[in-house]
Length: 250
Image (cartoon, rainbow, N blue to C red; front, side, top):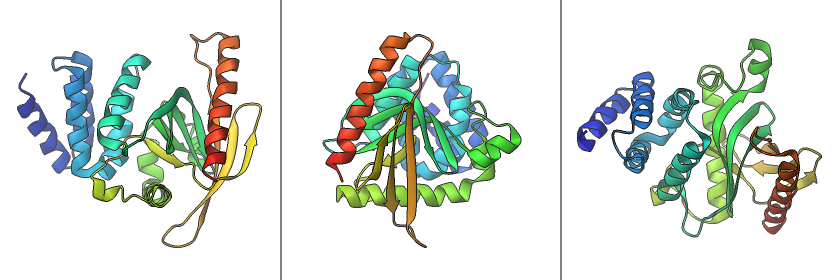
């Protein structure tokens, strides 16, 4: 299969806002593996460079729905390839990887969480709590975020990006870095609390209108393949790692 032809076809779909077809075609490429997976991930990275905001809002939720039966190890591999090659700042490293949820007021995110020395990144499903409870949507219905709350989430993401940029004293936009997954800042946190299930903290983010207080709760989730004792030890270790970073960047 000719990589250039594949990339041109996907770029055409991207340019013409054919997000459903684009998500389906990318998913088929990954499932069939007719092209080496790392090359497919590079193609995704190039698409993100074209317009990562559109990709994240319209394509990403549908792509993850198409890939829900893919082994988690392969999803981790895709996440790490794209994050490290297209999203990370110089000196940014993954400290810990785990499955869990990150809740913040109206928005709940569930998936693979990457704790770096600069931020939290979640690759997975993001839904609006109120709509989830009223309409019966859950982690298996990733399209909800695009239907119910897209404009608000877009403003939210931009505010978080500015907060991370300010904290790192680096203009992420000028470095031609893209976004993959959902980002959560860890600088200047307060109200840091360890809970039975995880850890919570608050951060005040400046927006175009007024300061936004983000109350973030991180909850590791036990996988079926994990023994209870193993998970409890992991959770305790993760709490300590997250708490240490939050205190470091206060």
